[in-house]
Figure 1 (cartoon, rainbow, N blue to C red):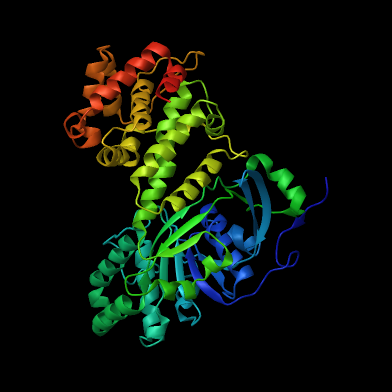
Figure 2 (tube, one colour):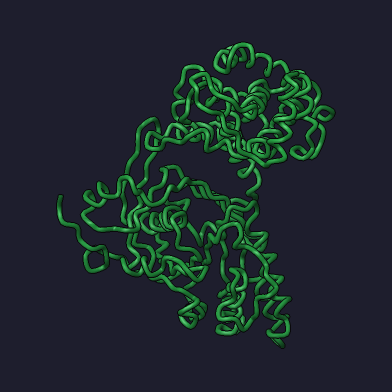
Length: 493
């Protein structure tokens, strides 16, 4: 075992670049995704910008970050073009980290730096929220949008409303159209604090709306976080005692929808990540990419899980490599779900291929039972739209997806698998009670029709709105009861 060095700017090289980005959030995801992307963009383009991290809540990790001079390693693991990937890179893009609750003056002073241009955030889904108890005089406001308005107003005053000093906001919270929600919250705070803004209210509001740009984004990378199980091995490899190593999958995708008051070209010029060969897509509409991700990544997950588990297989990768289950997953993804989307087919095939490689990640044992939580609501958002569009376009129901629904219903019966493993469904109690009541009838017609009529899940009666669905679900339930899951899968292939 070699002796490890402390990790800081005295023991490792650290770039010094202009601070161009304020980042609300210091967690694993932002460091392994956004900061990794910015680091790559610096390496491969003339972007030349560093990140100031702001801790969005009172308790956080900025002291840990500053203790290592904001240096850390990202360990990417996955499968690309059929080959395993396992890399370690030292990221030096964060210049410093601030706690606005103890360093409010330093936090507000960020707005006085002329080169600051971007604000990036991941404050969790609960972070983009409006709280009317926040006061303009709070130091700082407790909510993230409140802090932003304080910062923006200070910038407006510092630069006398200079049109070139507005900011580009790119939230990464996992909310559909996150930028639209953030802009709405900011506008509400400007109204709430109208009296505090006084004579500046109208001009500040106009400056925000005209010269600041709030983009919606879609982020996609699985980040397990600190690699507890392999940290000793990693530290020996890098020769540093890095306590902030982040493990992530090698796949990444960042779709950024330009703000309505700017052009795609303007945003590409200011943030040239796509020129660095990264999967960063700047577009005028994020919606089709959101639909693609939900449909081709989350959709197959939802139906492969019960089919896989009840076939006696526990790991997603093993299911993909299984001679029968692999064909089922391919059928659902390529032959059914892909046919319901509106992007170019070559783009969809490339994305679906990437998804399969992610499922086959040799470094991650992804338990299918971890995906089974709340399966009915997941099917409703991820797969049911595909069932309806497929029926509309093809004039028939998608066999694989409907079979997946029958598999979920079977999973919720509970009991034991053939090998004696307990089947433990986990969902809203109302859904669990309903399924127990239906399975007690032991009548697959009643079970199929009862599930499809359950408007607590579907918000409609699928017996009436999707012709032929009840009959096909009943047929699949009978098939599974009679043959067992794996043999039933073979039948529908």
